Image (cartoon, rainbow, N blue to C red; front, side):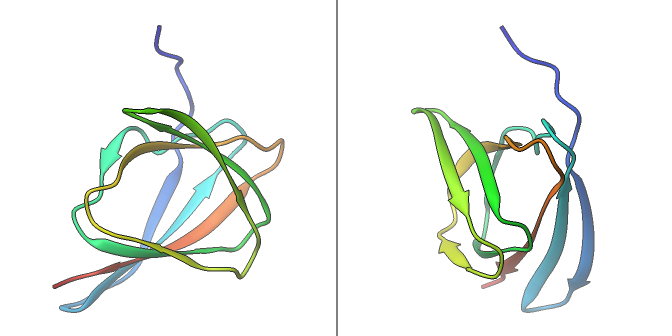
Length: 97
């Protein structure tokens, strides 16, 4: 059974020949929708909290702290869901090859 969730809102801040920088805003319960990353990327949380990650292998929770970045390689497949009772924001920097 699929749960209908509000959509996270994305705003591209910069898109040039080297990087794409996108701000993601999640109201409580909002999701990105299932997607696959085509580029390596870095995420910088602007909010401290928890995100639920749904992947082909199951679910996990990411505990994020504002200002503490992390990086992932291309190929990651997931749906990202705000598991907090407040808005969650992060900035994603995709690295173009």
